[in-house]
View 1 (tube, rainbow, N blue to C red):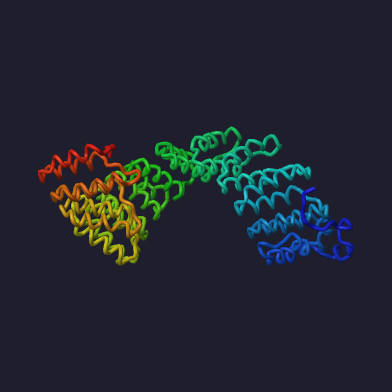
View 2 (cartoon, rainbow, N blue to C red):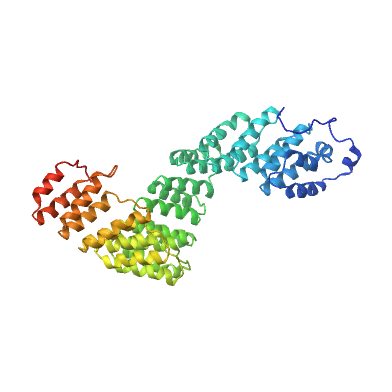
Length: 479
């Protein structure tokens, strides 16, 4: 017997059976309301106090208990549902497959896969045979809890327990494999559904396409979408977006745009996720002009751009060194009342760095300070590199020296940029000083670029003998 913490009943049910018989099934509503009013951390004794005058009728009319447990499941009160089941077992009220299935369903809605599996195991102890609903709910609980192995195991166990897997069982298991990053298993389950005399639906395909998207299998994702349409299964925005996202992850921007443009033909309207995935695909594909066009076309499609839309477009411009467009988009974000993120600023800073626009880079740092946006190592790395390309070695040093104030540590790339800036400014003493700092920092040995720039700085100032003497004592690692 499961330990419940309840006092042992002196009789099977309450002594006042006459009062219990006068209760009707409509009494379930009263009991459910009272149970729902209990605090989430209510004790087992609290639940017993609510039910003790009703348990006799529950034994005679099990459907009342089913109604109560179903109500608790819909309200996502899984702990209370489990306590109700414990009280029923303690008082030897007959529990059936519907009672257990309802309680497992409550666990599923709350993502309590551990408890769902415990209940499934407890059914055999009570000699209750699980049915399709019991297994499907438990599989769904495992899916929501990211337990793909448990979900797969339960699906395999179903035929052994004389429970026939249905579309819900398969869909939940496919989704569990998708969330676990196992696209091969998801596709195997999808392909095995016809053998189980089950018809794949939009949910089946959507999970499988999403699994391919996470696995970077853009061709398979597009093929599955094509099979959906061939099978006259209506695709929705989720399926299309997953396929476009798969193209985006693999840099297949043209395939992503082709799919997006064909969505109206299958009566699917592109949404914000569609546009953002397409813009991101263009960003990764180096198509900054197309990304700009997509961003500009969003209002015509009755879709409002968000921070993600702007960030991807600014990044596309930044990667191409289009600093004017990047800064223009950053300014536009304020105009449409979208707060730029650190990524927004860093992408714009990267655009300025590529073209040596050090003044614009320093202005961005000031903007970030005013907006209370947190500058990080990436921000400073780009700003220092911009100063290096603009031959502003003093400003590059000033930025490097200010990093500790923001609790940031300079890496090899940042030091290399600062040393290169000193080389351009013929400040051999500053270059040597920075190289010495690198050599005396843990896990920051001078690299080839840093050493070469320092040698060049000394050579330009005719201090090559000193440079050779100092550098000969240093260990050089690759940048």
